[in-house]
Image (cartoon, rainbow, N blue to C red; front, top):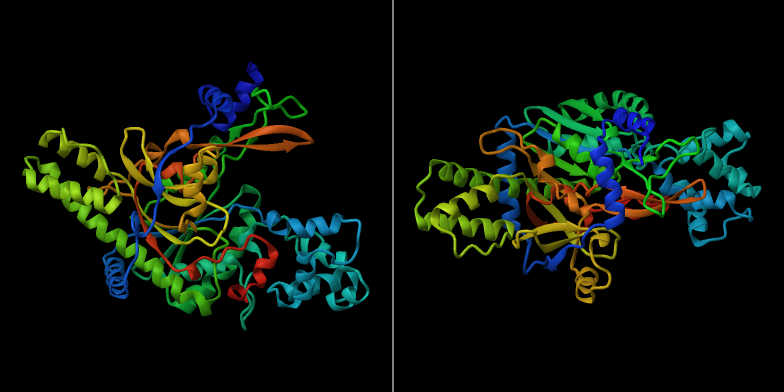
Length: 504
């Protein structure tokens, strides 16, 4: 039962009582698993481009950029880096003082290879009166880690990933935020301007903006462009209520309701407010130094070229359907395009030409995304699938393991033996054929949320995540999967990932 005080707390967040009741009901009922046809593959659902195709798509994208379209690079950057340092937090709390696990040994054996080494060394000298080298010689390993993690030093345990030093250069180390500014200049600039949008958490916003301000001019001069850099926060209205094991609202010690961020799916609201024709989406930690960037730049242009060519054809067909009285053969041509380009396979044999025209218009007139997918190398996360929709049609979707029934042996085999993986490498077309922006929340499949187990102050709770940004939040978009090289996927999930050759 919600009290008057609860209702005031809810209203302050911009959430309705109806939404809260819906969320509490979802804790009780859970979310349905998706019905799968197959894991997408090169044989069915994934496009593999030849060298000639690649050049054609790059050329198409280059031409598009010169036509005055607005392009935005959208970077979800609100995640804190704390999970990156889980092993090092554990080391500080351990009942031993010297590196013992393989992870700890790797960290200290290679500490001089981290891009943040010089800054960490300066922090140790300031706070401990000794360099990293001397602290290690004296066995004071934990002092080194404390200066990396905590506020007295670099405070990396609390900063967002976008603010950490990832890569070394002669002119100084760079953060992922800077690497994304460089990428924006290399493949997303149009008319001499690169538009980059970062989603940042409230507590880090001022610091993030200040750092961007300090660095943007440097890269603007280097690449001969101007930047338009914007920011947004995850909206409080997208937070979700937490529940106890009994599915009743979880309360804080002061009796107030506990709300949690709704996950990256909440960012569909932020994405919806971006004024752009084309939007690139890429995670903050998936960046490489300049010496390895060309492959990433090439394939970003390839997937963008695929997108705008499909969009051009879609718009041509939509304009034709708009005029009405489309001949039967032409309708079949459009049907073939919808089925072939987007793997949308309906059972529409019984439809009249008039009904078919209406159906095709509805299927074509929606946001479109092209997703780069890489060969599966066992990384955790989502994969590309052909799934059944509620109306019985089939479409391409990116699924997380939590959306798949673990008791269904056939489905689990599809998931574990899938040939490809989604590295969050998307380019999106978000305006219709009349140049009007789509209302993106209308295309979310609300039945694809997630429920996870968490705890607060030692008490168990259930957390509700909204349909993921590239999962259920884009469920009703037209989707295309294009194979991209593994070299375009270099995420940093732990601090020791920065020691991989791709980040050195």
